[in-house]
Image (tube, rainbow over the protein chains, first blue to last red):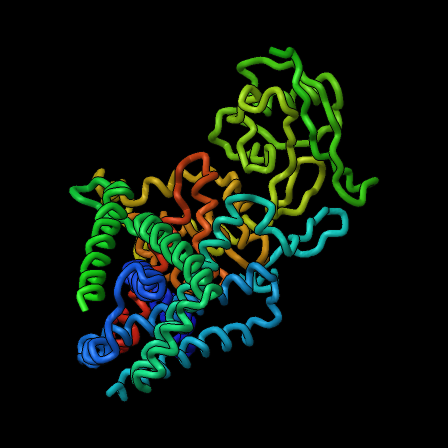
Length: 121
Length: 141
Length: 247
């Protein structure tokens, strides 16, 4: 137990983020994708008008929901892509670079989501 | 303990043992491995969806012209094709995720282990219910 | 029904070969024969130099693990009848160095297993005069499945991560660590934690799940590993949120 008292072990946190992102993505993403990116553009269902959409998204609860929807799944994807590149392509010597790019991308996406939703008018 | 520290944590080279190098295409050599890699790749389509959402939110905040332009972008046949493929992958993610999480949990009731389908079953039901609620919210505008 | 079946057996002689090659044998096809029976027939009647491990021939010693048509199997539990009439390909277990023919070197597995401290760890041993450590059937149920492991290493042959990462501890070692962690008589979970919560132990596992699928004793090592990931992650949260927490 005393083996790493001061060393910051990041793996458990990354795994928890991966799991949370997996849950959010599993429950929420399919229906959003189906309706917003397929049914609306194909005209099978009528999308909201611009004022209705803005009014809907501006609601604080909706903005919080969208923040969760657009942040944790990115960490889920980052974690899986990192391991797939590490194992799948066997490019172990680039381990730190891959990890930095993957999780860095997730952090960047989260920051963008936070900025967009915080400043949403 | 001293000898343990001196032994490296992997198999040393032995000149007369045969060691097969794992091919870069190991994941194509068995159907189970391919299915695993496809499951992992589904996360890329999850990320693609999030990026599309961020563009949507950005377009909404920039004004009606930006929003209309984004809607036109979604109607592009290549984008539609990408989203159809994405849809299959994110559904694949959901199905595999609920099955995996059932296996990852050990829940005991009255001393007996709860079988996997009794954990994944309610997850699937909850998924359908939540999807119905979201669909209602999105479609009633 | 044909009365013979062809076996394509991987041969490797370190003195003469640079790499393994296949040699074909025709063996009698009997409904009740397993692949091990066929190998014994070959060694008895056709080629005495064929080298392979086996012992109990009833699926409990874990010696006879090999790849049958690319799938990790105990050859004592794999019936020829399930593969007839096509030839049956027999190879040594994947992801291990081949010593000779169908025999692999298992030193790596043995060392990784030992690292997990697969024995009951007590802070203080009870003296014999105080009697046995008592355990209810419910307490036994929590770890019994993981105690069924026969160290046959089929899971290592199935695990792609073990093949790709030589440092990875592997399914059976982690499952056996969990077997002791969950045993009510054991007090060593904290001792095993630093070994388990490493990138080349539980965090290297990506839950492919092949280990569980091939396990002949239904140990479910994949389940054991994921459950321990949750334990370790919650432990980490506790240590971050409450760093003053007692040992």
